[in-house]
Image (cartoon, rainbow, N blue to C red; front, side, top):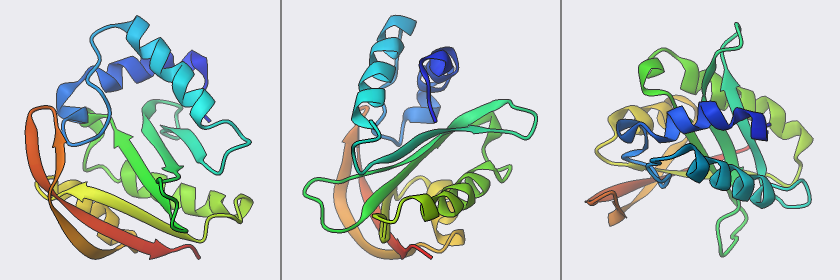
Amino acid sequence: KVTRSDSADLFRLWSDFETVKFTNWAHLASSDQCDRIVERMLRRYDPSTSRVGPFVIRSSEGEFLGLIGLDVPEPFEGAHELWYLIRRDRWNLGYGGAAIAGVLRTLAEFPQVKRMVATAVAANIGSWRLLERNGFSRTGVIAGGFERHGLKLDLFEYARAVP
């Protein structure tokens, strides 16, 4: 799980605009700003909530690669929302798929998670292909559903059952 000691790695992740461009994560300019976001995230993902994670993604050598977790969309309609963020210099190397597989194995500890949903910006081909390779089916399109960082783009909606 993410801890306060991960803040420096998280700052490097969130301060790379290309990494956060198609996400809901803020593009950070300072490590102080990052520390505040980490504190909010730790409160939001308190073990007393139905949220899962957030988990740091690490290589087998312990190198920080990114983040992954399951949020509870509001209003909650019975599905947890998968999200992930991989360091840009580690894109297309299989780490995202390994992280999703790891979360799926972990879900045995979280019986409240029955179904997962996710969204991917239509222009982010790597992200929606990653979801499809990991058992997610496209269920819809939200025209103009992503509006952030000066962009307004379509969102693909995905869902999958939890094994």
